[in-house]
Length: 322
Image (cartoon, rainbow, N blue to C red; front, side, top):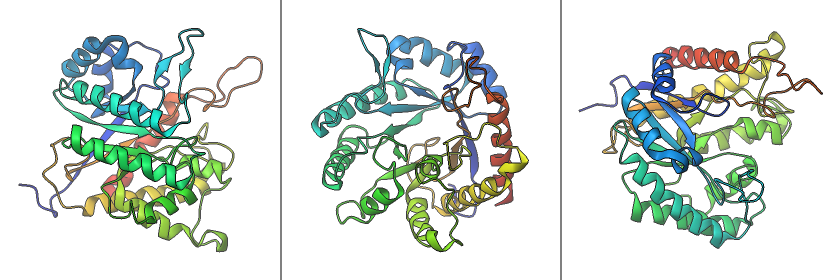
C-alpha cells in the first residue's frame, strides 16, 4: 500500500490537438516512446471510430483523457464545422453532460490503462445561480453514473471557470464549498482574459494567493501551457523575452504539484487522477489560431512540436525538484 511519504509519479498526457496524423497504433506507440502515459482526445475520436481508438490505446499501452465539451462535441450537419458550444440553456447542457458522461464511461471501461474525464463545462454568461445548478447536477450525475471515474472541470474561456473572479465566487459558495468538485487548472486562459500573468507581489494581485490556494486544493490535473497577457499560448516559450512570465507560471505549477504530492492516496482506481498516487500534467499547445501565424501565408511563426517539447522538459525538471 502506498503511503504519503512514498514518491509519487508524474504522468504526462499528450493532447492530439494539432497532430495531423490520424489515430493509429503506430501514432500511439510513438507517443508512448516520447514518455507519455496517455493521450487526451475530444469526442469526435470515439464517435468516429471507437474500436480504432480503443485498439490503438491498448496496443500502445496508453491511458486516455476524454475531453467533453457541453453542449457540443459534434459536426454541424450542414456546414461540417465543429460545434464547440452550441446552446445556452442550462437544461440542454445538463442533458448533454449526462449523455457524454455515459459515452465516456463506456470508452474508459474498454481501455486497459484507464483514464479520466476533463470537461469544458457550461457557458461563461450564466449567472452564478445557473452555474451552481448545473455543477450540482453534474456532481450528482457523476456520483450516480460513474463514481469510480475522476471528472475534472477545466478553467477555460467561454466556459464556467473562464474567469478567476467567477471561479472565486463559485468555489466559496455554500453549495459548492464542501463539494467533490475537481478542477483542471489551465490558467493560461485567465492570464489572457485578464491581460496579465498574476503576481501576488503586485498590489493589484493581492487576491491571487488566496484563490490559488483554493484551486490547488481541488486541482487533479494541469494543462501546462505558457500563456501571456495577449494570448493563451506563447509561440516560443523558450524565448528570452518570455522569462518573467515564464518564471511566474512555473511557480504556480510548482504550488499545484506540491499540493497534489501532499494528498494521501485514496481508494480511487489506480492510474486515474483520483488515486492520489500520480500527478497528471499535459504540456498542451495547439495550432492556429492559438499558434500565431504570418498574415496571408498563414505560416506558423514558431514550431508547435518544439513548444510542446520545451514545456514537457520544464515540467519534468520541475517535478524532480519538488
